[in-house]
Image (tube, rainbow, N blue to C red; front, side, top):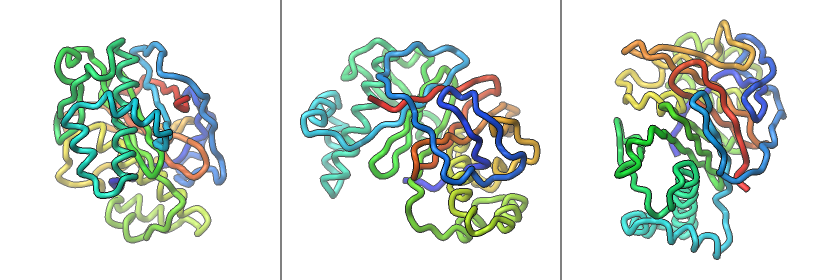
Length: 274
């Protein structure tokens, strides 16, 4: 699991319409969570949409066997290289669910999909589906996985917040001077959730850009927006003048997530994998 940062946590609904967040305050609304509707991945994907799926990596033995059967020989060998059985199981389920998800959008059998790597190792579709224009990204933490699918470049991050973290040491390393000053002004009650909100946001935008920023996460100033929009979005441009947008996702209690994608006119919709 990689470390990432995120910014102010808007009160987002599962369809991305969102209610207001507090201007330049990064701290999320304490104790607020969103119950994503349960669904199966068989929904149309509009050009201006990003679909987000939260999934449980703990599956029954029978279900795990079904997912393992969709993997390639190479993927099965990768799973076998994990030291602990629970790590093997998480890889098998996470990869198998990804195949099922993308297969549903492409109307293709899950075992038929092929994957490659783009810039900085970013996963992409390969083979016959490479030209489908479908982009995806995924993140996992503990027993949860978060998937995002769209017709545009994107990145997503998921973190379990119920663990001890050296907030100050990490924040000082990945935040800009302005963001670090804002962190230092937070109360002790706000710090923990605000840290994960900022961390996931930075990770999601870095993954979306896929550019391997030489200057690191400090260059991505996406936390504590001074002119944040009502839904908590922050828009920025990279060195090539491409526009990107990042926002936080309110998920079930105990989890922090963020989503970033190319452009500014998109909306997100989210579901819990049923």
